[in-house]
Image 1 (cartoon, rainbow, N blue to C red):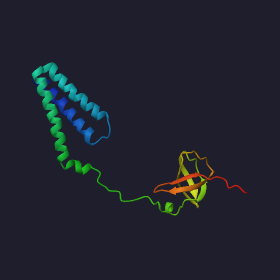
Image 2 (cartoon, rainbow, N blue to C red):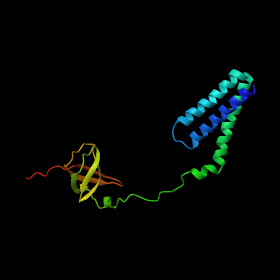
Image 3 (cartoon, one colour):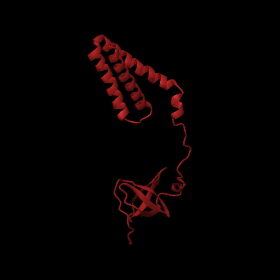
Image 4 (tube, rainbow, N blue to C red):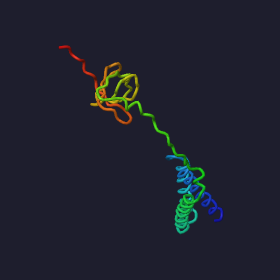
Amino acid sequence: MTFNLIIVGILIVLGVALLLIEFFLLPGISIAGVGGALFMIGGIIYAYSYLGTPAGNITLGLSLLLLGASFVWLLKSKSIQKIALTTDINETVDNSSLRSLQPGDTGIAVSRLNPIGKVMINDIIVEGKSFDGEFIDEDIEIEVVRAETYNVLVKRRLPVENY
């Protein structure tokens, strides 16, 4: 009987520890989360099988209580703050070259616009986006429709006909 209680206790504690590691340290679903769930379920099933239904019910309740209490304790403790990422990023991307571009400026597609690619306008290479979703091949003349915050909306430049 005592041996069975020790096994159940070890399985539940390992399960809770692995689940807490999964929740707080490892992103996504990993081996720790799956292992923790299997250890907890295994401990509960072992308690039902070898200790009886009342002991299994008590084990189920205590294991859920232990998991919830340790989760709350870890959230409120300062130990999480020691490993948390607290750095702020105050840098921005320099898009000053986009402000110099005006509707009607012409250039050339440096890469295929599919519908986004690189364009060169006034000797400035920026990200260009096809205005109407049309694919524009490389080395095709383009015209600026509108300059936005992060890219330029362009369209294929129609050839000028001589009258």
